[in-house]
Image: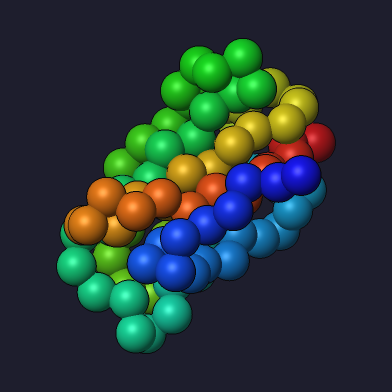
Length: 88
């Protein structure tokens, strides 16, 4: 079973996946407000965080070790959405 998302969660796509150097997070034009992201290792260590605006955000993945990561996107209401990211 996976993590189910709330209907109020923020829709987004993250690519390429697997990622080599740069991860792109794309938000639909309908998303507005304060949107934040955090990226964690499978052990729970945070490797990156920040705020997103409408459109496309590009994150450098150069300093990440190869492996599996969890991308968490949180909207201003506190609802969270998740994607698994693989770093090659």
